Length: 450
Image 1 (cartoon, one colour):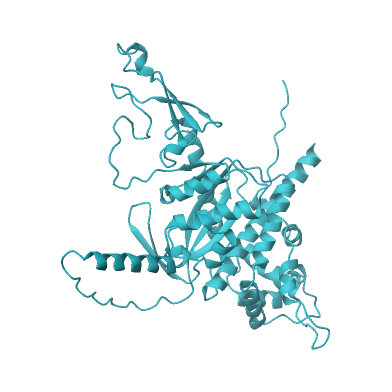
Image 2 (spheres, rainbow, N blue to C red):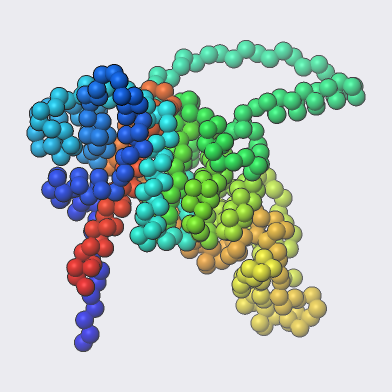
C-alpha cells in the first residue's frame, strides 16, 4: 500500500495561537512601512528633534487591527500597562507612550497621501513573485460600512414648479437639449453614465472617487431594503488565493457597477504582469461598459444577467442559446478564441426527431460574442463551466465576512471620508499581510516536511 503525504495547511487560527512575539514578527516581515516613514521624517537639519517613535506607532496601529483592539485609547492603555506588548510593538522602556493626539496626526498624514496603497502594491508584488498569487479568476463585489459621522437631519424637498403643458417649439427643444448636454458634461465622472469611465485613467478615477458618507440602501437575503449611513467597500479578490488584489472606498450611495471599471483599470495599471482569464460578479454589475473593459484585458466576463424589461427573444432560450423548431435548446460545445465564436450543437432530443434530416433542423450554430457582450460570454451562459466559474464569486463574499468579523472593517473610529479611507486601506493591507505570513509559514513547513 502506497503512502500519500498530505500537505500541511497553516491557518489563520494557528497564527493567532502562536506566541505574541512570533506572531507579530511574521506579520511585520510582510509589511514594508517605509512609505509611511517618509511622510513623518524630518526634512531639515535644524529645528527640534523628533521625539516620537513613529515606526513603533505604525506597528501598534497594525496590531490594533490584528488583536481587534477597538479604539486608539485602548491601544495606549495597553502600551502603558503591558510591558511585553510595548516591546513587541517596538517601543523602548525608556520612551514615553505617544498621546491620542499624536496618533490622530499620524492618521491624518496617512489619509492625505497614497502611502498605504503603495505598501499594498509592494506586498502584492512580493506575493506574486513568491508564487502565492496565480489566480485565473477575479471576483468583484461591494460591502456596506457604517460611518462614525452623524447623519444629517432629513430635509423636506421643495415641490418643483409645474411644467408648461404642451409640446415645446423647435427652438425651445434645441435650447433644452443643449442645456441638458452642458449639465451632463459638467457632472463629476461618477455621476455620469458608466460608459464615460472607459476613456479615463485609473489615477483620475481614483482621485475623483466620492468619499463623503451618504445614505445607502440594499436588499438583504429576505428581499427587504436595508439602509445605512456611511460608505461602500469595493473589493477585487483572487478566487483561489483569496488575496485582495484591488480595493476602493466610496460613498454609500454609489452604484456598485460604477466601481468595477476603476478596480479593473487598477489591476491592469498597478500589476501589468498579472493576467487572469475570468472576472465574475453578480447581477448588479450587468452593464455593457464593464464587459468592454474586461475584454480590453483579454479576459471574459462571468456576470449574472439582469433583465431590464427586455422582450423575450424568439428562437432562443433563457440563456440565449438557439432553439430548434420544437423549442429544444442547443448545447454549448466550445469557444473559438481566434474568431471569438461560440459553438452550439444539436440537442440530445434531436437524435430521434423526425425533422433531424430536414433542412429546418440545423446541426451547428455559431455565434460571435461581439454580437452582444452581455448575452454571449465565453463559456456560454447556462453551461456547466459557466456555472462553476460563477460559484467562485463566493470568495469575495467570504473575504468581506473575514474583514468585518476579524479585521474591524465595520469599526471606523475616524470622522470624514479621507480618514475612513485610511482605516479601510489599513484593514485590507493587514489582511493581505496576514495572508502572506500564513502562506510563508505553510511553505516553510512543507519544505521541512520534504
